[in-house]
Image (tube, rainbow, N blue to C red; front, side, top):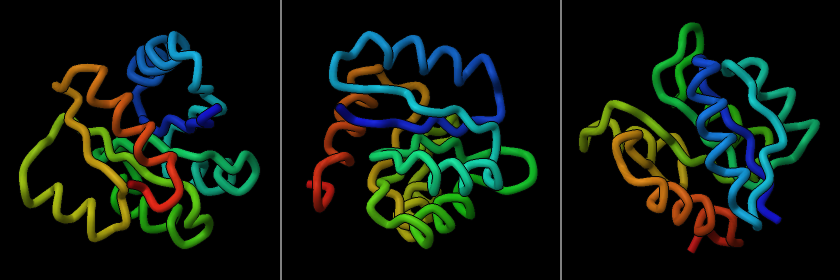
Length: 124
């Protein structure tokens, strides 16, 4: 079972993602923090396999939060999920330690593939 933490400041986005992911027999949503600070405590407490991280959030942005997640629990892979998709942002996400970057405009299958690949040891 792949344990996923969904980080997004918008409750409707978290709800929609949870509903989609609950349909998958190999994925379990274990938490839904609304921002970076709460994410750190839940990552330590719940030890997710994958953290789905929005980029644009009030307070701490997703790239800063990704660096923090990687510092406190490097075995939790981060998949960036964003409305904003450009090569510069993708490069920044990779530099922050994200295992994958998925645009919110892409099909759910793209996200599911990214989650499954990121959950594998070595992020194949």
